[in-house]
Image (cartoon, rainbow, N blue to C red; front, side, top):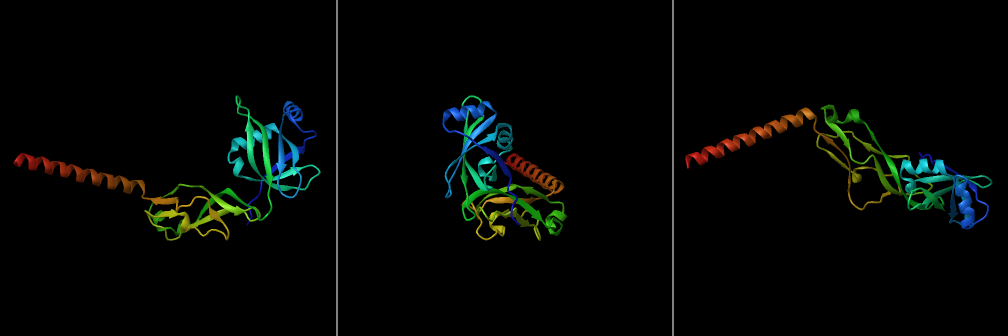
Length: 217
């Protein structure tokens, strides 16, 4: 199932250059440019408040957007640069690149865990600790997975789940070139406490024995 691509709404910017850009900012807009593909660059304006919300939400540069501009067909884009005011750190301009369906891009994809009821470790009171709720993957713009699935069937306490344990969709590759950890099943707190108490007792016995041996010497 393809991931729902969020909309990014804009209007065509009449005029180019610094003068038109300054006028857009005075009107509460952020100027930008759309380039790439087989079409000419398109100057646009985006509502400042809406853009700021999306920037604050995070992952703006690694999100695939469905750009909607009046008078033009919707197009998939990814942001390549956001210029900011050096003092206020607010957006002043952005560059968007058009993408074809067969263009490869890197995006963060949600990780979904299934069959928890089939995991013996969780039935025993173990705790699923999620290290990476999202994973950055290299995917085709036209075949973005909604999520990747981690099957917990048969997982025991102490099991560590790596990216190599996940069946990724065809053509999808992690951007990190190592077998990183996604999650693990740790022992229940009661069992950890019991183990810690046992270790403490063993240390205490060792210290007593060492003291007695010194006394005998």
